[in-house]
Image (cartoon, rainbow, N blue to C red; front, side):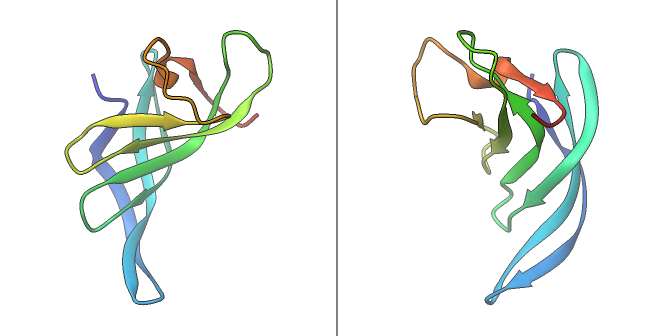
Length: 99
């Protein structure tokens, strides 16, 4: 199941340096809980949602987190260091709220 429900995006267009994107909110579901969070939608259909935090299994430190869904629906989470370990799915380490 996808974390970002793209069909719930609501926002207004923003033009910056000649490039238009949409700024608004979208529904995100983490561990069975759904909340509306801040989001950006781009002209290619990609959506990026923020308003969450992530935490590694080996630490109590909380990091600001973002989930991105590309135009094809593939999702990835970003927080902390840039690691692409196949043993660790960052989306499973996200919670709602700020660090």
